[in-house]
Length: 159
Length: 424
Image (cartoon, rainbow over all chains, first blue to last red; front, side, top):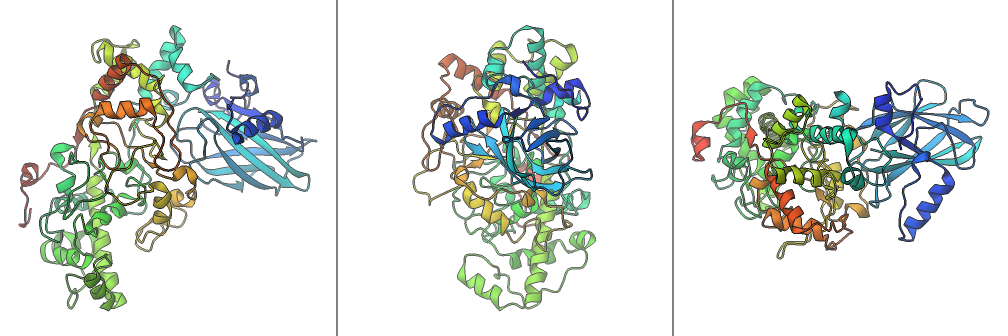
């Protein structure tokens, strides 16, 4: 089952259902990551976890929401904005953020090395230089560092 | 319609393979149409602009590029042109395992059609534009085998007027020996080193413009529609899967292609390639030097004399996103090679980067068996397809042939393959 997305960032339900972005609970992630590290079976997260957020980071320091302006596409370089708020809902500015990711089932990382830049709105950032080379389950992992602490969140996407 | 043109799978299914394999019902039928349209030439669109070549869309440059493409004077022995390996009568390929110019290359000749859509060129992606790519073989000892000074003299002697109309005045080449160039040959290299910086720059500028003219021509070489494209178009127009364009076996092959066989993992989109680099466990070819594929191509394109950020590029700062976001070499790039388009695939045996596999069935068997990689790790997993399924897949692949289209008519001599030393 796909998750109904109600984020205003999506122009239509058709696009929304097309996106099926997933935010995984960090605990579940670390389990699958650990399994991958030991060469065991890699399991897709439960479909109920799918969605663009808002979701809490693993230690609940942040609430992160992906806000793609158009459907994520295969093959093209593209940008995706996301917002970071603290536990009280205040935008987190000047955070230091790193990005990693890949396809857990294929054992490869992102085909490009994206960068992250602040966007115009407060607490909003933009991932630039993102590319997806094939359909299937992708992960985007963000490590966020600010005075509120260092924490991580992983988005799972189904392209 | 826009959404249909995107290759997007919406539902949280256990895997891509299962999503197609378990398709049934009206909604799923619609999804199958979307999958067909996503592979159709109708959704390709124009090639992205090439900011590194300000003459990329200049018709006069394309005309000059076409003449240069077939000119055998652009070689060390007067016998090799671009068309020697990129034969227009063979969809701009040569049908042999290893390209043959003045010597034998270490790789298979690649198709030209559609490469204007590709961020990185060559099997290892060591070039980042069509013009930079075109310059590589010209200075390879086993391909064209000449030098950039020689090519500058050919332009000055035989193409002066056309060149100057497009690119501006030619500099004087007086005192510049034809045999000078930064190539492997020591004598040529010594002559090159003896030139002044100004002379080297003058020659290199002409050489670069030769590449940019060749690219303006190659940019126009496109894939022509195949039976598969007519199948997708008719399906979209009528709303039901047509039974009279592809036969039952070919349609079964299509379902496998987007489903159980997982071909669209890499061969996706209207060019049937994701333009990426993958290790698929292709065996080494005996007798060739070590070939590490993309792991060597990444540093090569970063430091390439003619890349998008080079002084010879027309791109403004910030107009080279592919280099900007290029990932560093990693273990996954070991023996990873470019995913070629599958358009016209049945017409271009033998297969893989050094022609290791002789037939389409050999290729399908390779993917079905998923052998371990010679180095690095293969991304393939065994497909467990039976002979009937392999037959169907092969039949589908044969439906992807449509030839190529070249908007500019070929010179008559070139079409006969007989163009020699005289001006075309």
